Length: 299
Ligand SMILES: O=C(O)C1=N[C@H](C(=O)O)C[C@H](O)C1
Image 1 (spheres, rainbow, N blue to C red):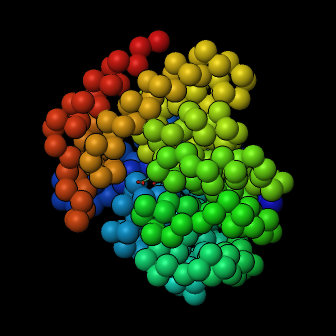
Image 2: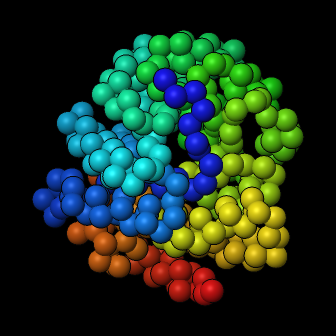
């Protein structure tokens, strides 16, 4: 198992494009993956929330991973794969399946949702998973989706588990726990921003990069923002960060990934803007607003 995958930079959690008759549009998926990497993304995430992974059946998930793995291998890019549920045993089985893609850098595994275990229970869950996983783990912490808060000391304890290499942090803001965590990270453990409008402040605090659905749009500018913070170009980073935060806010006017799919479709990059129930396609106003913010990015 690769112990220290290179997780710095911008990773794009790919949407799953659908054809008009509801199948996965594999060609469009492959083209999108290539376009993201050519525009400067460090990697691709297969089966993130943005992929509507919850609505894909097993065969479709394999197709998505195979397409992403092929393109990442071709481009020498980082592949992460979303896996896991709120059931520890089922998550162990899901992770074991990922041994089919040993080239993947990490599995992106959600904090167990809905069950609301104690923080010690969350820790025990990840200790068990890391122990048997064929891939290093990135913890996906998104309390507004999971209903499971974690404090900085638990996040740090997660980061000290052998085989846990990072956290995708989507706290819906920058709170005391975020600042505390980033003030002292365990060795070889990275924070990746997972809440798009807060990418720039998280990079300023020391995040290594981000997993960002809105980086489907203006991919090269997101990559430029990460580079600007890492190189200490503050004037550039602040200005670009504010503009990209406005773009991200528009892209999240409706449940993710509906607006992003609407924009990609309007740009002719995917065959339909379709999403699977219970999501509904974004309204035209949200798509237009996002296209306007994209046009406003300028140089
Ligand atoms: O799929 C992902 O990974 C992401 N999902 C988040 C969400 O839908 O809440 C947003 C983030 O940009 C990446």
